[in-house]
Amino acid sequence: MTPIKDFKQYFNRDHLWMTGPVAVAALLVLLVLVKSCQGIVYLNSNECKIYKLGYPIEEARVLAATLRDAQADSLIARQEHDTLAYPILSERYFILKNFDRYLAFNKKVETGTPLSNIIALVNIGADQDRESYAVPCDTSKGPLMLVNGRHYLDENYKPDSLATFSKSYCYEDQKAQRVVVDAFMAMQKACKEQTDAQLMVNSAYRSYEDQIGTYKRNPKGYAARAGSSEHQTGFAIDVTSRQHPMRWPFDTSEEGVWMREHCHEYGFILRYPKKQSQVFGFAYEPWHLRYVGLETAKRVHDEDITFDEYYAYYLDKETE
Ligand SMILES: [Zn+2]
Figure 1 (cartoon, rainbow, N blue to C red):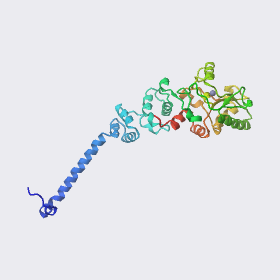
Figure 2 (tube, helix red, strand yellow; figure 1 turned 90 degrees about the vertical axis):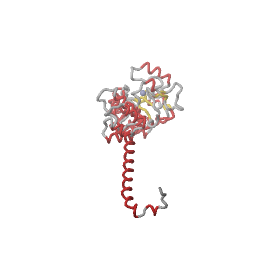
Figure 3 (cartoon, rainbow, N blue to C red; figure 1 turned 135 degrees about the horizontal axis):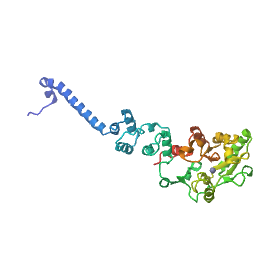
Figure 4 (tube, rainbow, N blue to C red; figure 1 turned 45 degrees about the vertical axis):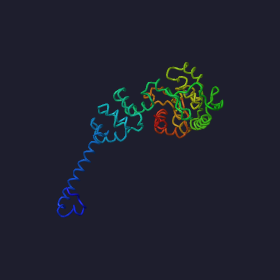
């Protein structure tokens, strides 16, 4: 074979008839190759694997784009179309890291449990075994620290400084964090002006040791175990009024209703509201206020959620 001396020689008139069809053919082959590569890549994609489980293509696309690789893998490994997988992505308080737990918990709860309840319960850890899920309370969050049956304080935790309530507003000496005393004074002043009733602090800071006694004295469900009471933080107060010193008449009294509606304006939230008590399994406590500061109190009030949900969604969302 004679080597081609230069391109000009190769592309002389004798060969020119070939270049058009050859180029077109080469281009077609290339296109087919690219397409088949794309096809192979697509077949191996999470989107395609999810689609093949029976999800509509649009859902498969969104799931694949949203889920972490490990989550997509476990969804695919289930080998079934879980009808909950797609709708939970658009739930208001959906947290990506909890995706697998939502699906698992849905299989354990009664059929027909609202999706928002599944989301809320998983977010606050109600799907987990209490013992294995228990974690020390992050006290560095100050007024936003979360204390409940799963986030506990140890016996050594004491607030740095405590202020005393004036004797006019309690039946026996009561102490709380300074911000709480100040916020209570502002709230009781407004309540007095608007309802003519005098709010009273029945209980405020309680040490770990105090709580052991309170737990023993109270009916089941109305007092927390030592270490899981907010009273140990110095940010919680139990409030009724001089006119209605007992807890239940206070609940429906004018000042009781006023306090529920206005406490967020002073940085307090009703920590155990009636509306959510059934869902989360805690007892409704119209007297127990928790100080969380103005911004958080407004948000918890406006969004009508519990502090546990607020904490999970706004403060703890990104942690693993
Ligand atoms: Zn209380």
